[in-house]
Length: 324
Image (tube, rainbow, N blue to C red):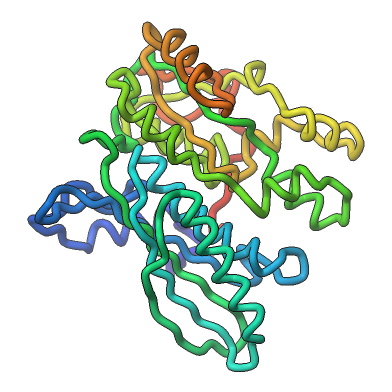
């Protein structure tokens, strides 16, 4: 009998999409960073993220306030991936009856802090009891910032693959926590990612940016989602992946490969997007003038073959899948 472990997280999403009917208010349904639904006064972007103790966080390695921050940031990053403006978050909490009130108050302080940094508010939710672990479910609601939103669909042969920020820091931070290594810059990147809200809005306003996604499961996997949605291939050039100094130092000290973190490490919540080759230089230069966030091209899309490759070859590792 087939199990979820056989088909994986994204196979499960595909099966759910097959049996989930649409409705007249749905503009974009299952399969993108956010659903897009039609409301009386325009369009709404809607996304949710689960955050489960023992899978996504541990109270032994993270402060409660940081747990709340990251739970909100991961949901709000989906709004950024569409180029949207966050409006509010609804948070559902399940926890054991013996969970300390001070811990939960601190978690919610982090949730509120992250939402406020994105000009959003926490406006409600639900609570329930679990037998053992804390569970947070954050639903983020937003709207297109300038009348245009980006989806994962739209990459064209000849487009370049570009990313914001520096990759691999969050995954290296998790590695440092698991091995009790002293790497404060990396562990902060793991605990306190920054949703690229303004950057996403700016990119979505450029017609020559054709598709976008946030990097939650690793560059290889998420670039692969852009390729699959656009029915094209994408080749990531590892020579274009420049590790941040903190990542390079950590990997040098602990005999690890920074490119591996950058390719398959998740939870950076940077943006990956397809951009016209003809306009890329001008748009990236204007982006650098507007933001302190870094930006770089790291590959190209092709119509010659489907899927994702690294340096022209099938990747040896992909990214995070909950069921594999």
